[in-house]
Amino acid sequence: MGSCVSVPAIENRRTPFHGIDSNGSSSSASVHPSPRTEDEILQSPNLKRFCFNELKKATGNFRQRSMVGEGGFGSVFKGWIDPHSLAATKPGSGIAIAVKRHNQDGFQGHNEWLAEINYLGQLHHPNLVKLIGYCLENEDQLLAYEFMSKGSLDNHLFGRGSGSQPLSWKLRMKIALDAAKGLAYLHGKIVIHRDFKSSNILLGANYDAKISDFGLAKDGPVGNQSHVSTRCMGTYGYAAPEYMATGHLTPKSDVYSFGAVLLEILCGRRALDATKTGREQNLVEWAKPNISNRRIMRIMDNRIEGECGVKKAITAAKLAFKCLSDDPKHRPSMYQVVTDLEQLQEF
Image (cartoon, rainbow, N blue to C red; front, side, top):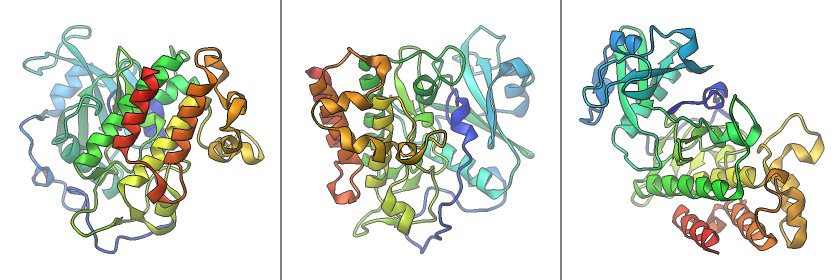
């Protein structure tokens, strides 16, 4: 889910890993099955309540050529609104928005829709995608976001979608730092994203990176709690091992996911790739033996060959593997990750 919610962000339907049920710790803002009424929504003065016909008009009646993505959760359309009144305008006038129209597929989709509203309605940061408004009318559930013109990081790294171009080393490090800042902000607000991955990092016109898809976000542990116990949801390859095994969720779960994305950024390969054989299917296992000395260049994306020195590559790879530590206590905080990435850019 998310801004220009690029195709991969909504293609990968998220399912429980092991069906671990919550044992009653903290829960997210409003993710409880309940009647589909607007009373469920924590109102925010920053969000506009759209009528269905307004978003229908903004997207040209949800016409096929306005569609920018579709998948298990629904379809995403490009639309246009006036920047001041937020009223629908003609294509090309005003500002572009991404309108996500959800499939009517039961409680899980509705609950994630509510979580998206209740988190993005209250959380505001340059590196989080901006939710402009929502529509809940009869059985229709829609969300309107700022339009992220460059699509997802996934598109650019793995060549999906028209117009995707290889990213330079400098842009990759900028995107990594932007995303790290977004996660650090969330953790400062005691919120865990729970589905951080490259398809949920969206890029603006200047390659400014913003985190999207808050449908699985949860309030983090507070007080004397060490973790939140929850049903294990997310995406294989990015989810932390202790979370998959026990359902125990902490901010360090997001740090592991960030490590997997950083490794994708460095290697240009997916965290999990079923098209490869043996050990190469798992990016972490394949890359780990090669993070020292000049062997690091064996795993670097050859599209950025010559753009960074061995020292920078090793520094970035070691940071990724710190985030990927099996023991969450050995993972850095996202604040430390931000500091390390800033220092990496400086030298």
